[in-house]
Length: 147
Image (cartoon, rainbow, N blue to C red; front, side, top):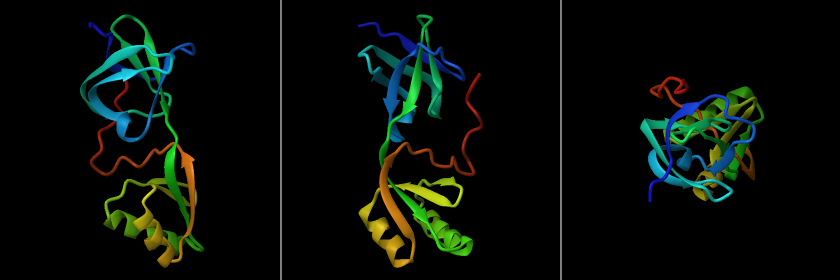
């Protein structure tokens, strides 16, 4: 079976582009078969692994494009009583090498019951929810991948 290939990432896929919904792990790939919400199969075949973001487009070699949507997943939103406490909580998450999303006065991590207990013991205000997860890329993350 000859599947269309997505060989590059684009910034603005067409508004009518088919959608592939992917969780955080599935958005960081180089080569894998994928299926859009409407059932169309294609092969992600990038030169190197990239972290796809919500709204990115994948240009297929048949002239079409697919839009990436970040799939909601189980996460923990972490808040603190003070900026100093939030920094302390961030240190503990970083010390465990946990991918962490930072926005405003909130840290977001993927759900882990052990970490949830640890955070509670450290006095964090936590809330478990379903939401897209977009962690920081890290100090050694690649520069933007778009053309």
